[in-house]
Length: 272
Image 1 (cartoon, one colour):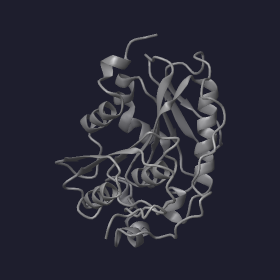
Image 2 (cartoon, rainbow, N blue to C red):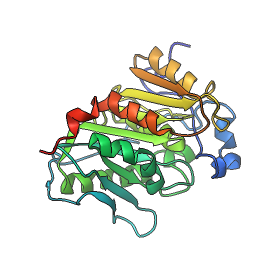
Image 3 (cartoon, one colour):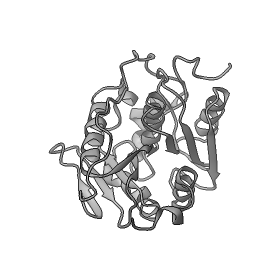
């Protein structure tokens, strides 16, 4: 089979959360039983982010630290601003796993984001996991769009250095969203993904994949190794990192992903 995209849709795998959260094994069994798409290829408008403005907000926006987005009363999310930045600032949209939230996703990358001077936008999914993993693109795309617009208004974000990443279900969603919006995101950082919903392509961002070789939740052979092979067959640049561990995101792996994206951190750590 010559690749997964056929220039009209991609077909890699899906995920759950991490150990200790049960990974929603019963709910996700229908997805993990085979690494195949569970929803039809979406119409071209589905899954597209429509963003306005030039991305040059104020450098006097939220100070260093973690801030609630303030876009919803229940499922909302957080915005992390590192202590030292050099505007315009690179931004990572980081997506949580099943049954998680934005703060949990942020905790996985906070240290590396601080080191590299990266703003992290970590929204909550509106349901237990991301829309396209339950059915199809919809309300989560629109919420991420609103969160990005808000961030662009308050921070001087470098619109040429936007990444989308995630862990487990979040990694699966990041792949689908990133491949669908390659004109928005230059890179996808997918930590232990399992599935990517079929999408209509808008380009091909670079993809960083990491996965533990002893992952009992999303076995590496059926998930990341297969995803990497299919993406490469379709001409996507993939950096694949395997580590001796379970369903997790080691800090060193995040650091390597950030360096692959942005280069050595010292080049980006000086104040402006």
